[in-house]
Length: 234
Length: 234
DNA sequence: CGCGTATTTGAGCATCATCAAGCGCCGTGG
DNA sequence: CCACGGCGCTTGATGATGCTCAAATACGCG
Image 1 (tube, chains in turn blue, red, orange, cyan):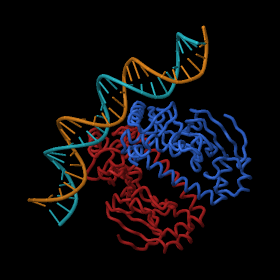
Image 2 (cartoon, chains in turn purple, orange, brown, blue; image 1 turned 120 degrees about the vertical axis):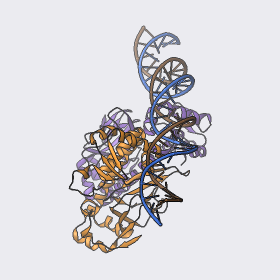
Image 3 (spheres, rainbow over the protein chains, first blue to last red; image 1 turned 60 degrees about the vertical axis):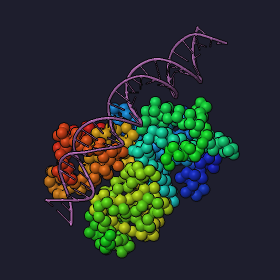
Image 4 (cartoon, protein in one colour; image 1 turned 180 degrees about the vertical axis):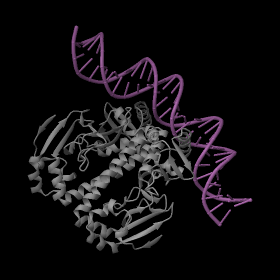
């Protein structure tokens, strides 16, 4: 894992993340306390048991939050996309582990610096609260999916979620709004959807033969967005 | 729905709820802005679409938060027990509806009063943040259940959850730690567990014939707590 | 007591899981 | 350049868990 310093001024996600609650001078003053780390795909960032002593923003890449049963059954309980936040401010133990799905950059702060922001910057706290409340809602949407949706509905819903949150390579083109690199393997999709790998594969095939989507390697193209929405029951 | 005023000093959940972040004088000053409402079982408190203009603490009873698909499939995505909080501070629309499971009391605040607390009382905001982060974790635990646990494991887990959170009628006795009134019908359990009503019934029967639990009407007695834990895979 | 609703019970079935090959892509090394 | 091997993905056959439909029973309440 590499570390380096980077100016907050160059940060691609500054306007969309927690940091936007900070005045510029405060941000620059904080800059020396932050460090960028880069992880390859499939690397453990933080185990479940001991809580890490730092907090992070995700400037790029996708992070999986997983939870497991003692017998090995695993469920992905959350995905972090660029601009999302990683950390457990008030707890000493986290129930879930964090792992990279794709290559990931993290912008990390030490616990102490972060907690001081929470003390001193009311806007920062309020924004974190707002983000956390959104996180609750996102979790609840997923509970509806896990509890009540069929396999096809689940897969379609996940594709729409990823389409919404994956940054397109070329933002100008029309295509970029329909096309993205899958950040998850079949196994990871299954772990997020509460399905088995074979079921995910079969449902993707169904969507392909119905002309709703197309895949070229890891690239996914949504041919018929309306149909995908219908099948997702959103 | 009845409304009446009640002194915060008499509140049964004051020490465990958001209010404990407030100084006594602030609390008393807030008191006139709060009103108690009582609801019978099975009553809609707030629909999904329009966000309510008030916030509430639950001093007694159990509230269901439900989310539905257009075709009627329903999932309970959260339960509120005494001392829990109900409301959507920053959103104008809520994804889920709130309904009473049992008879419920709510201690309600107008939006304006609540938002002012968020502005002026940093400790209050911090405590709400802490509670919200816990809510995220609770949701994630439930995702693991919905995605990966078997029917029996789900039912056992729910019984343990209710045992933990239902206040015993007589706190002194040993029995009260093993026994409680079920706040949910079979159908509601099913909606929370992502199962069908018949499946819940059958799994309860299995637990009964195995001597793990016993039911007398709506009262549930846990005969073998260790066995229940084992079957819950917790 | 009798009705309406909640719950239980049973029989058959569908969806998704499991088990087992087989395929394709890609990097390695001959 | 191609054979080899590994891994991720696909495909097929079979089976189990939980769903559906249907009916019986229990329960609460007038």
